[in-house]
Image (cartoon, rainbow, N blue to C red; front, top):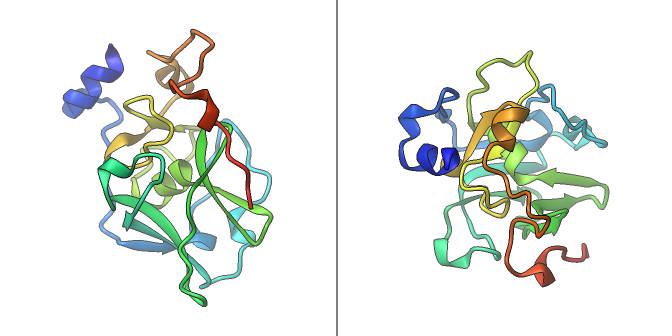
Length: 169
């Protein structure tokens, strides 16, 4: 219920989402904030100037009805745009076969102002749909805020469990 209220009335959100005035960012330069879940391969290990995260214009094969409004990653050398895949119910893109970029976390770190960089915060999905990584649906939140209104039924976040995991090619 609290999540529904925040989605309908974002001005009530104590962690108000402030979108940065930039359109893209080099993936290797995305800030590494303190995360509750540490990342294995740091994005700073990617070659500089090769992979860019764009604020919008990408499609999401899991929510095609929303159109081309999602952040996306592009290889600037080959102009290849990476399609999102699911890993543990989150949307990722895999680059160089070893770097898994969580699109929600990377988009938040690149384009949403972090209210307190020294505090470990999570990129929270306002509508609980982990496949929806639009900037309008992402906010920085504490672990307890993230847990409010979460699905504890054990069935996961989606009705169709068949597409919960997709193979990485």
